[in-house]
Every structure is written in C-alpha cells, then in structure tokens.
Length: 135
Picture 1 (tube, rainbow, N blue to C red):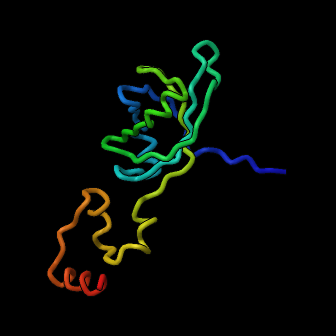
Picture 2: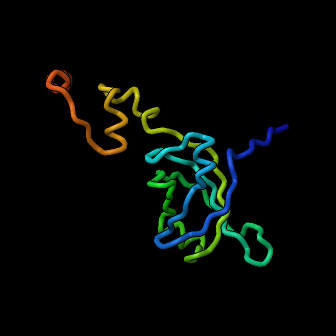
C-alpha cells in the first residue's frame, strides 16, 4: 500500500507576460522561501468550464524578487497557457542554493553573497587562500 504524499502548498496564480507568476507572500513566509531559492512545482492548466486539470507539468524554478517565478516559454507553449490565465500550482519542495553548494564552495561565509548578488567582496587573506587552493 502506497502512502499519499501531500504537496507543501497549493495555490492559484495569474500568468502575466513572459510566463511570470507570483508565489503568495504567505506561502513564502510559512516555508522561509527567499529570493534566489529554488522551488519544485507542479503546474496545472485548468479547463475553464470545469476547473479540472487539462495538462500538467513539473518544473524547478528560481524564485525572483517578490516571489516571482517564470514558467519557461516552451512550457507555456506546450501547456497552451495564455496571458492572464489562471493556473493551479502545487509546491512540492524547495531548496536553498547554499544547501547544494555547501560542500562545493571553499569559503562558505561568502555563499549568501555569491548566490544573491553573484559576487562577494573578500579579504586579502581569503584571496591568498583561494589562489593557493586553486593551484
């Protein structure tokens, strides 16, 4: 007998230009989802008459500013999602980039800046260690 695993959250979102939608602020707050984190989502295109899923897909997206996500353009085409259409979204899981990178990046104290900004200001001592480590 298989156990049914519930999604972390289920919500509806309006798809705006270029496949953008927003993960509700309350959902982000409950799970501690921040800009730069990644979410695994099931996206369902709903039948406008019955509200039952017509098509579905799974995707992993990076969370942008104010909880924005972008459905890849190929996926919006394959699911036939139109501008202004409401989709059903199931949050399956999320992960923080620092969790993935923690054993791959030598200077862990800089991970948040590297992930969020793409760079980090480092000390002269750290630069020497980085150069020695790479050689």
